[in-house]
Image (cartoon, rainbow, N blue to C red; front, side, top):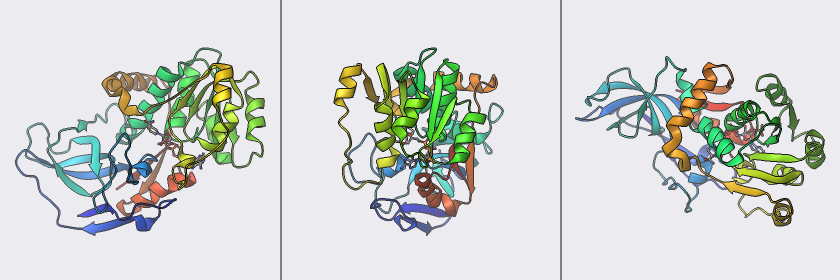
Length: 330
Ligand code: NDP
């Protein structure tokens, strides 16, 4: 059996050497347990935060302990009446090829409704993040202008499409020309801006959003957010979902003072974590599933092959190597 442990707390950008592979005997299920074979592993930017030894909304990873993330696994042995061999389950599991568990906290997935990987993306945490962040905090209205940063990622691709369903003009920012094309061609974005090749982001946002930005769904923080806030409309809502551009910073980032902008324009800015909406996950999944079935939503995935490539796939998120949801197929 193979397991991936946290070897070091990364300094700045994570590296392969921050992870350690260890080998052990393949376990077997004891009474009340199931044995799982890992099929698909979700790698996510928020895992970077858990690698720091600091208090947060979720416990930090321990050194020399397995990393955990959302995983799809198959039940290959069962001594628990709630599961049968061949069941596919999802939940927070360890980066191990095989593991045993009591099965509590796991959900069975139905691959007749959607392919297994969808439960790590559009019907999983990132889809729900897009849905609740935008609808509950952003409250987008018909005719408003929505800007989404990190638009071509797992959360961003879904936010833009829900924005279109709600009748918004939708503008996205992303890091390559291919992603800019994808946003417009596949995800219905009205405009998209490559932030890496655009000299003046403030002007680029101003020209894409001449009436100002009513709703800003922020996945990246930093300079892009400064440029959007410089174009914010009166009574705008800013959703602080993520700030990947500063996750690897070793010093507290500084930037323009935004208070006068918020005051002058009566802007509300709200951070959240998806766990806040746990009691409504079922409703969120039903809505996303319905839109998928009606072809109002689509999704993209970047699937990397091989258990050994899990750490690199995680690191690659910080270089924008993914379009849509980054997943490792074991
Ligand atoms: P993504 O699929 O969007 O992957 C990360 C993307 O971030 C990359 O593809 C890259 O795209 C972009 N990126 C990387 N570095 C930078 C940078 N320095 N500046 C700008 N963009 C950068 O990840 P997710 O969709 O899973 O997550 C998106 C954000 O939402 C993250 O910040 C994450 O932490 C947050 N999140 C928050 C949740 C919550 O509960 N609040 C839940 C889930 C996610 P590009 O090529 O465009 O640079």
